[in-house]
Length: 399
Image (cartoon, rainbow, N blue to C red; front, side, top):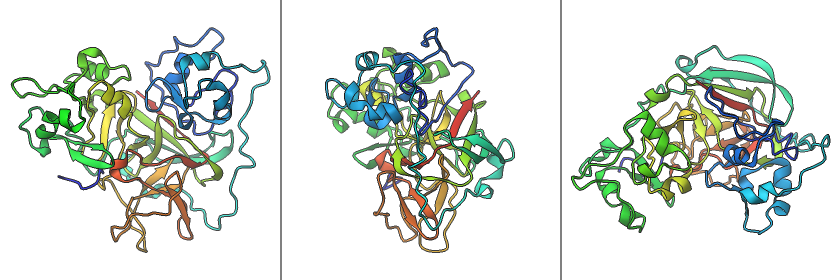
């Protein structure tokens, strides 16, 4: 085995008019607004589409924010821990003109002795499409702050992208990527594909043909039909790979506060980017394994922990040590990049190979050198970060 570890917050009618915590938007010239009513407010269908991080067509409490999270128990009428389309459609709507706003003014932690500002010189210059600049921008909670504007093509500098799917059950591990289950990482070689029935204890897995060839998406159209939440039935039991060349024109723009601002209560991650590696590639939230596996598809990551989707292009769901690391002067884990709230992201293990254990739910903690900061989750966990403890900036991806 190559590794021992694997390595749209939307306003909900007027109820979430100011749902701004962890606001991370991905825009495309092809974005459709057909689901929006004539008054311009998003429909429930669009709400679920934008906020459903794991694409299971319902919203858990970890996927919602602000007033919707506050009223979760009221809307969840069957007490199953999820908000269905029907429950959202039947949710009470506030009176016009009386929208609620998220107020984090009393939620900012101010007693840290050390807060470390974002250092733009750490980014790989060759991966930047424009010179990093400073501008005043409005953050997710409405706070206006000085921010860095970082524009990239989300293309790695330190490693190649892929491979992802082997093409025959006799292919060795160098022909495929990696996958994870129960916090462990597995090489996606031909043998792995051939034994998926046993791996998942499910007789419906059949990603290969009688001649041993593996069913792999081979065109952009096939990729997009198989990579969507409601996988086209034609591509059930396929190994799904989208190639970087399909989306090489995408441009990612990150807005990150120069000085991070810690919140006493964390915000759940949205369904888009959660941070940026020093090479300009997006650190993403957990891969939507429920939707992937439900269609008996596999969407491997490459050895660097990344793959491609139609929305954001190439991005990471795991940290495997393939990207630029900034060593620390002590034995602390090296730095990998920044979260959208401006707090640094560091590797899972320190220089002695020891995992950090005193982390909060966001995978963060404080020390007197780095201030508050995060550590990427173990590569097999499908969780780089658990949440954000600072006021978030934003990520916009355009063609």
